[in-house]
Length: 184
Image (cartoon, rainbow, N blue to C red; front, side, top):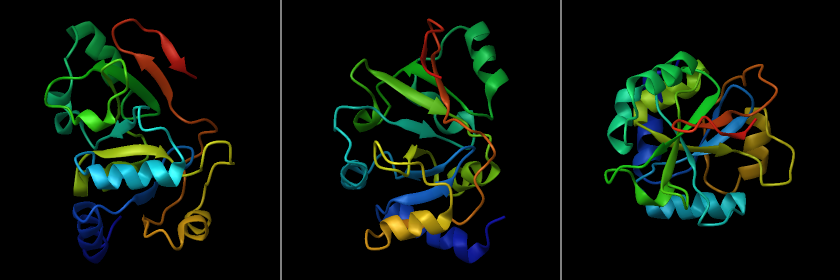
């Protein structure tokens, strides 16, 4: 899946605050260490994204991020686990342990365990990642490593080469407590 050299380079990129591009179920994503404020600022600048908008966070497994949220009742969590790994993002109430720079204005954290094996492997190697589509708002999605390299060639983005999944849409976002769908 990932060579030892690639894993080592990926860890260096994450620790040093680089933006990491990786394939997901539908598009290439951009991410960074959710604890690195400078990396988050660079990611926001690359995306031309407002600072007060929350991010999705992806992880390889629930245990990587469970402490970052107020865990709802067991039946709600069963709904979540029934959709993971996969393309459903769930909004949770953020706990005090959650990196403050990635939550939205409603004090919620959007979490997903991706169904794309390589995206999950990247998180397994480095830890949880902020996750946002690689395209700038209003532009077409980027679906290949080559397109990402071309777009961000001079921006210092570390690109994990792989094939994007066959999903046509980005992840659905659902509030874990209310069931309200925020994005289809």
